[in-house]
Length: 234
Image (cartoon, rainbow, N blue to C red; front, side):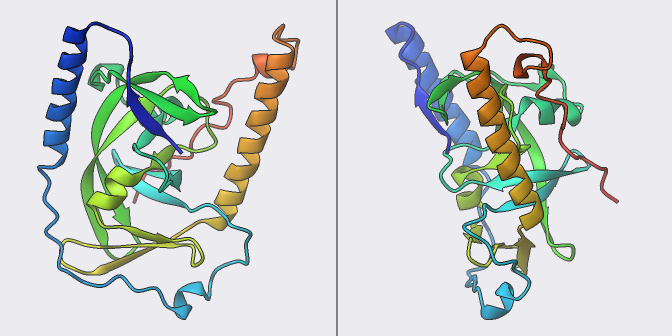
């Protein structure tokens, strides 16, 4: 879960400037009006037929942005922001000059203050292989290691009317023409991400206990050694 809160630092004038900037950002976000038809999103028993029995697996999907398919995208309904990790930003060959400043503190990763490099708006496509929907998503770019490439939070899920049903391991939304799009969670990828997350937590704990960084210790391991899998789309 990720949440953003205003910074307590700075003068009243700076706080007023930040609030004005936040209003401007929000004004940009709401300009995209949802014009999809009013159609019920229904999950049936048929949606469960291809689901591997699981113990509360997380929903991990893939999306397309910048002409590449991005895997290991966590559908995080507890997140108040859409987050892209710095390693993913680099793999997409984006330039830091494309980032716009972001002055709000971000919390949620072990309740610690997270470094936000800025935010970037990218055209992002959701597809089930047959039908697609493309929308603008404003990603907060953070510089922390993660087993995921992107966290898809409430801002986008609510705006595009996407519904994720964890039991069925599916996320459904409508195309602009009103056609149902059903995106399956990659359960094998979800388990792998979960295992990698546990490994990273263990490495962080070891690093905290022994900050000297001996040869082969977590301190000398690159967080990007298993960077995001981003093959070009066909």
